[in-house]
Structure formats: structure tokens, C-alpha cells
Length: 408
Ligand code: IPM
Ligand code: MG
Image: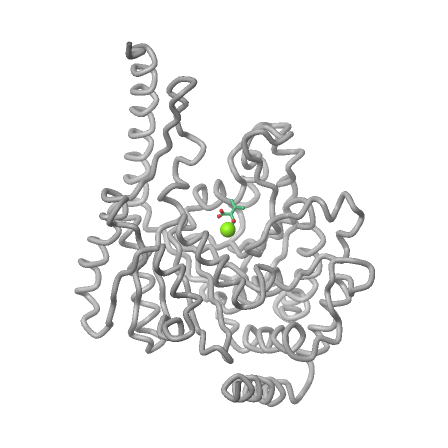
């Protein structure tokens, strides 16, 4: 016997979700508010530590950021604000992914540097509230999650454009337990939502003379939403006749990223939210681990920059938080600088990070007292940035790594 009452409850729930998504589409179409950072008298950067190791690594990254932006901070052209309240304790207390007052403060900023935040799942001691990352991406409409991964000695120079507000994440906390035996989740794709991320990928390819874009879906199985992603790509690609593009399924793309004969071909990858989440962890691992990658969450009004790894609460309970590796957060600072148009500073920071993390490794992060602290590492990075021979040193290291890898 079908439990008609359960079906009715689920239908009503579904109806509400549809209405909310339709309202979101209206908001997307209506809001064309664009902020040009170069035209602002003052840029406000909010620093939001998060929880677990977040506040520790965020502090180290903030030191580097303040060092590099010292002139503009002094002249009042940049203001850095501390934004509290994104801890799991506070979120659990108010039972919200982002407490209202914190969200209000975030909305007064232009750019946000955010530490990792604990994301509860079913069965955890915390209430199963929505992820703060996911909520922030939705609230601030940060539709593009941009994650570069580079390993010159393996011929890898990838940049991922992960859709950041739709897909399986849009209603990730709004699935339906229809009854004890049936659970249903939803996946969302909209015309505007898919178009803007795909267009961003193509525009990046054109601007950087890459002219090759790969779309990644599972449109052979997830026919409706991934199907829409792909058909939107077909439409948008027509506007970029000089850009070669192709489409891949996520399973084979996951394999191809570790295929030494193929992976060097890929340059720009555009993909729905969940596949982007998974594939970018794999890519980061190839680069040296999730701790080596940064992530830019871009919208037209706000942008948020973060590490791609989690909050490692165990390091805090074991008293090791000061030894947590801040390099992913510092990478996020580099991405923020580049987004602000501080290209030269961003480049120097990136080169210094490469030297400190991959080549010279004079301060090694082990996550334990036998390694460096995050603050010591930040100082090492700042000292490296100051080296007059930075660019030459970096180039030499990269060239010899490429040569060594070819000789193998
Ligand atoms: C990421 C993270 C988040 C995500 C988690 C913490 C919700 O894995 O930024 O990739 O799934 O997007
Ligand atoms: Mg992830």
C-alpha cells in the first residue's frame, strides 16, 4: 500500500523548493550589480577565521596579506576587518549555517578571506546544519569556484571552474525523507546559473590565449541537469568560435587526470558543483596535497577566498593547531591579490610559496612540534618574497625540476 499521506507531504515540500528556486532565478536575472574593485575609494576585506585550525592558519595568512598590502592599508584605501561568529559552537547555538549578525557584517565587505569551517553530517555530535561554506556561496551568490593546479615538471597547468551555487549542493540540506524507507535528494541546474559559469571558463580561455576548454558532466546518466549543463555549453561555445572545446564524463576524467599521456592536454575545465568538488581534490593531491591549493569563490558583488581543505578539529583537541600548515590559506591570499589587480604582488607571493613549499623547504610543516609553526612559516614566506633574486631563483628551480623529470 502506498502511503499517500507521505507522498502528499513530499509533494508539498517539493513545491516549496520549486518556488524558492524560481525566486532565485528571478533574483539572478534582476541583480546585475557589478563591483569594479579598481574604482572603489576603499576596499573592505573581511577576515573570518572559521573554526578548528581555521583561526590559526587564517592569522598566519593575514600577516602575509597585511605585509603585502601595508601601503594601501596605511593610506586607508584598504580596510581589514575581523569577522567573528562563524564557529561551529555559535552556528549550532543559533542553529544557522551563518548567524544573522555575521552575515550582515560579511555583506559590508567586498572581499572575504575565510578559514575552514566544520561541516556537520548526519550522526555527528553537532546539529546537522548546512555547511557555512555552502551557505556563504549561496547567500553572496559566489557562483564560480576557481581552483588552479600547476605542476610544471609534469606538464600540468589546469584551472577548474566549478559551478558553486547549484547542482547537488543547491538543495543539499533540503532533501526529503519521504518515509523511513525512502530518502530523496535533488540536483538543480538553471539556464542563467549554467551559462554564467561556462561563459567565465570560455572567457578565461580567450583572455589567457589558452583556447581549449573541457566540459565535465555525467550527462549520459544524469540526463536532465547535466544534460542542461552540456546543452548550455553547446550554445555558449558558439560565441567563442576560436576556442576548441570538448566534453568528458566525470568518471573517465577522474582517470585521465592521472594518465601521464593525456593530462598535460587539459587546461580549462568547467564542471557542475559536486564533480568540481571531487575532481579538484584529486587535482590538488597531484600537486602535493589539498593543503597546497587555494580556492577563489567569485560573484559579481562579493568574492571569498579560502583553503580547499577542512578545519581539522583533531589538531586543536590534540593541542597542535599552531603547527597546522597555512600554505593553502596563503595561496588564497595570492588569489585575492590577483583578483584585486595586484598582479605583481600575487606573482611574487606565488613564487615564494613554490620555493618554500616545494624547493627549498627550510621550514617544514609536519603538523607537530617537530615541524615549524604556521607563524614561522609565514615569516619564511615573507622573507622569501623580499629576496631580490626571487624571480631568478624560482625560474632556476622550476627549470631544473622540469629537466629532472624529463631525464627520468
Ligand atoms: C570544498 C569543501 C566544501 C565543499 C565542504 C567543506 C562543504 O569540500 O570547498 O571543496 O564541499 O564544497
Ligand atoms: Mg571539497
